[in-house]
Amino acid sequence: MSSVSHDFSEQAAPTGAADQLLGESAAMQAVHRLIERVGPTEAGVLLTGESGSGKELAARSIHACSHRRGAPFVAINCGAVPAGLIEAELFGYTEKGAGAALRTHAGVFERAQGGTVFLDQVTEMPLDMQTRLLRVLETKKFYRVGAHAELTADVRVIASTNRCPLQAVQSGQLREDLLYRLAAFPVALPPLRSRGDDVQLLAEHFLSELNALRRTQKRLSALARMTLKQHTWPGNVRELKNCIERAFILGDSVLELAPLLPGVTEGAAGGDRDRLSIRVGSRIYDMERSLIEATLDYFKGNKRRAATALGCSLKTLYNKLNGYSQSQECANS
Image (cartoon, rainbow, N blue to C red; front, side, top):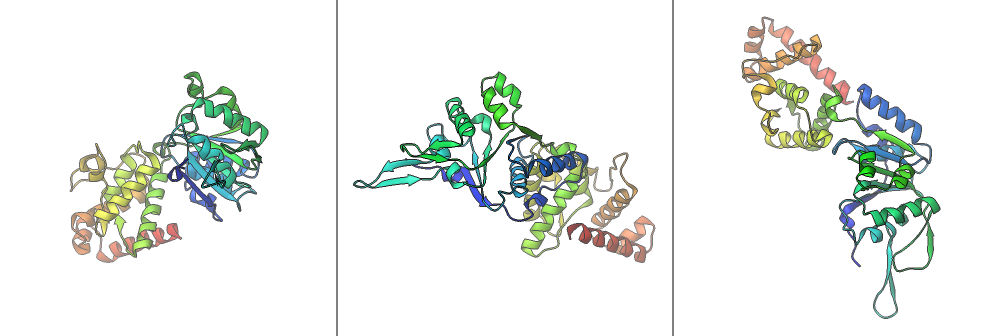
């Protein structure tokens, strides 16, 4: 029997892993508070949210807040494992090898002993497997496929789905009793489009990581920052991260995003090259910075021409730019 090792990941959560679930918006602060509450408990958690909204990162954060944080965190995508192999992947198997020898494979529950099992996309698990999983959750006991020795499941289970759990029950995709077993403590991850300035925060974080890795000092253009605010990000944080990575690869010192996003044009992001669109309600600081950087982009970095166009002295322009640089360094530290 062959395993499907690429459908799960296993590691001990590093210290401070909870800090990696970035977000300062009210929606994410509410999520942080829930994680801080449930993390130290043994309660089962069901994470819901759109694809790419950070459910696995939230699961790792819960693990990092628990007394199990020194033990393995093992994740498996229930929708990516063929139906005929998922029981072996979850609980392991024993089979005869050459001669009388027995070969054993430890499943996810066995490898996560003392730690946390993350069942990603649990609503995609076959119904007969849901029945077996429910019994394991109730009894804390399981058998390897092909074996007779009973094993103990000393694990905490966190599950996730990008479907509405109640609709999944109504459509027959999820057992109702399993839902109530898994969702002792539900946590909903908000979509990126409802997280306000978190989009800018995350984009700068991803860019800072790439700059540190490649020893560069690339930055987002003013138009790119407008694109960050105006795009709806249907792929959520995953789409944002991929977009920043593509822009980093393609860009030189200043990165543009609009050409990389389907349905977004430079005009939608910020108007023509000699125009800048400002959203009503933007902070004066943000408007001024966007105007200054867009003007610099327009004059291809020529500060003297930009200062003349802006009606300020060259010294004032340098002071403004130094202030933005120091602000960015503080944000990244």
